[in-house]
Image (cartoon, rainbow, N blue to C red; front, top):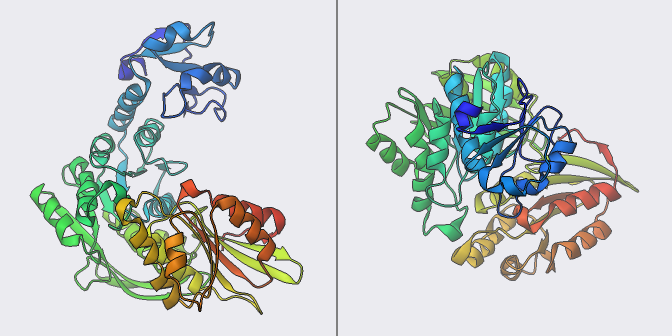
Length: 466
């Protein structure tokens, strides 16, 4: 660690560490604590907490050392803690023979990453992030944590500005890079979908020699992305999707509220695949994941079998059956994040889930953030998919959702509240047996509080994720 990070040791350093942490609250005994200075908090202020919770080693900045007080835990002192973590990440990548996958896209990154964790597990030891660690600290942290004997490493790489993916993918150096899709996310920082595609295409720049890129053949930005990949002289540009020319093709789809079945053309053979999580968008991500398994030379048959046991990721389609007097309600938790494309997918998921008895399908929607000058338009345009899906009950909160409230016709029963807490209170009081609620917003709106309040007030019958 000292050599990789260019640091200097203070104290009697341990022979080794059990892991790497940047959170003093959750650090486990024997781990190294990296005192990263973030936008809101400085890790150096929590060094004593990390020490009390069992940190075996602290990595701190030279400039902060005079203010560290009487720290007795051994330290490695570096110029900049985040930069040092990046250097450790590069060293971890250099020492492994693992096959590496990089995943980006406007929608479906975390779902695809989690699918690959499950699908590659029968073929070897898989390393990937414990959560959606896809930014300038999450990627190097995940990379630095990678054991030397890893067989497959899967790294989610996100962005909301140009030039964010480029330095991260050069650390990751994937053998296969996927762009799940290009959609209207972070529009406040870009002028067009093509600009978003250009930023996502930065992932091509880190692909290992002889590696492959996998693109969504159905996406409108496909030709633009393909051209960039060709200009970089990437030798293996492969595609997935419904398109007749897709290398990995979705031939047919049959969905239900509990899961779906697809017929996929993989390596020239049509196979039937059962997926344990519902939604066409999930099926498309599954096709991409199966394509990656094939490209890596892993066990495709075992991966297909694993998809049957797939469950939605928390906050991304996780289902709860909640008991109440007279029956139960179904809660679909899509509260992790939102943009126009994922909103449409979630509305389709709600439409595919039948209510019971006198119950209603209810879309509980909050603001999509980072839409910039496009915000009013993209919120208004959600009226179309809601009406097409036959959703007659819409509960809204947030300043931007006023645009959708005004765009919906009188045939839809709309409840609008200015703030999330107000909608939390309304939702808890107004659900009835048989209801199906789908809760979705950008993370910053805090719609997870609606999910938590409903679960607190109406005990889960079975938290199966279905």
